[in-house]
Amino acid sequence: MFKINRLESFVNDIDQKVSTKNQFLKVYFNGYSDYKKGNIKSFPFKKKFVELYLYAQGVLMAKYFDEVEKYIQKNKYSNLILGTV
Image 1 (cartoon, rainbow, N blue to C red):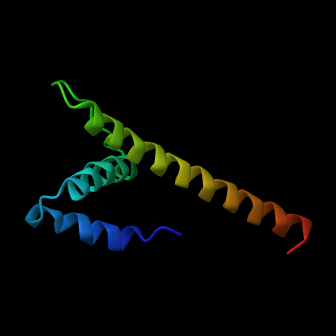
Image 2: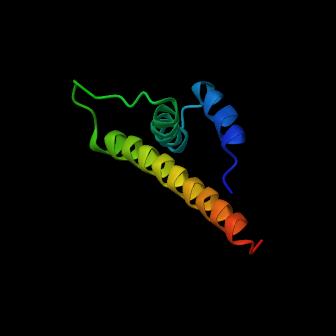
């Protein structure tokens, strides 16, 4: 699966590096981490489309991972009840 801790440490180091790829990754990860913290931002000022898109993709990926985790937990629980584990 996705190594979030490793990605988080990489994103924290991006301030020193200014490549476009790193800036895109930082915006994406901000969306991901904001969703996990329950603090999704609204943007009152104009932002570039790419920035909004990457932030939204980060939020959607976090939602997807949450749904996958819920599905796995639900199936583990139902398998334990049925005795199929």
